[in-house]
Amino acid sequence: MSLVEINHLSKKFGKNVVLDDINLKIEKGQVVAIIGPSGTGKSTLLRCLNLLERPEQGSISIHGDNFDLTSKSSKDRLRLRQYTEMVFQQFNLFKQKNALENVMEGLVVVKRLPKEKAREIAVRQLEKVGMGDRLYYYPKHLSGGQQQRVAIARALAMEPDLLLMDEPTSALDPELVNEVLLTVQKIAREGNTILLVTHEMSFVKNVANRIIFLENGKIVADGTPKEIFEHPSNARLEEFLKNISILETPEYVI
Image 1 (cartoon, rainbow, N blue to C red):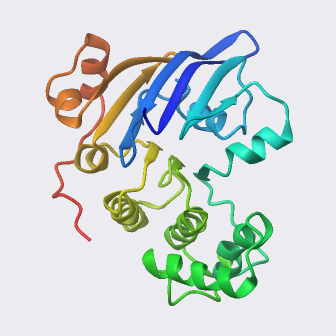
Image 2 (image 1 turned 90 degrees about the vertical axis):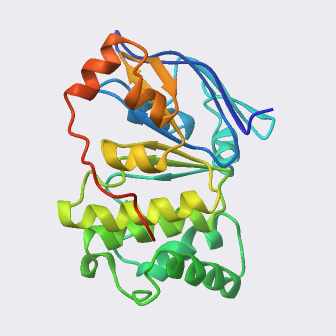
């Protein structure tokens, strides 16, 4: 059995079909990148899997635990989020809390850990993403890249089975993008299961071990980086790849 199984996921906004019968299996430790043109439902897919959006139909199974994604139950939503964590485009840190407090928050409030234990975990995760020297800095005193690394540490601290990352570098200035991509690569190599939406094609090419091409709410192609980039399976994927710039940069190294 796959770690994650997504079945018949469909989502509309009004009459606009954003996701059309998505079926997807993800194995433990896979880094699955979702690529495709803007407006094709990539971010909406992640938001549905964390019940930030409620689809018209669909279910997800994680570790054999099944969830109806159309459920309005807050209990179901909280139970699902015990398995998943989301890293957002805009960081979503608590402005009135420092880096350490931001990472501790979910451990204390959701997992109900003692503060000393939560602090120990938070410090360890912040050190892992290179923020061990910024424990007491507030978001306004951190760069965008540093804020995003705090957000990644916050997600990792909750030990999710599936880490959802929605364009984690899209809100960053170009010179800050690489520090976040290096952090994502590091956690990928540690065996975390990641479903990632990104436009950073050179990163996808070097770090993802599976790529989903999404267009008009449908999975149009699914393969390894070599299959997707070197042997595109259909004309639309080939056209998409020709229209984007893939920087031939060296492989990311920590």
